[in-house]
Image 1: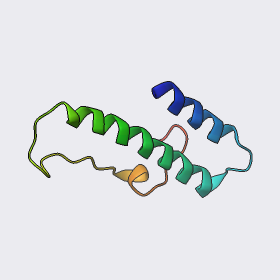
Image 2: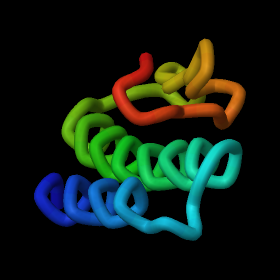
Image 3: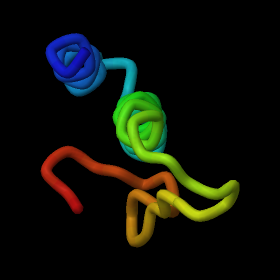
Image 4: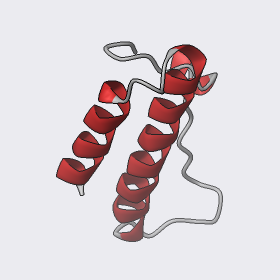
Amino acid sequence: MEAAVLERRADAIADPALRGRDLCRRLAALTDDWLRCLFADAVAEVPRRKGAVALVAVGGYGRGELAPQSD
């Protein structure tokens, strides 16, 4: 999974049509997809009460402004 995410990230950065805010939002969306998978795998193995675990994004990533080499 991680290799596919890194490849999609590299493709987004190399895409000349994606620049500025569009690129930052695309990188944030790709990171969301990756973290959703990691989070689901992590919490699936841990018994928990509903609502006992959360994943929160802050800073530029939380605003959907994830630039290359940021955060």
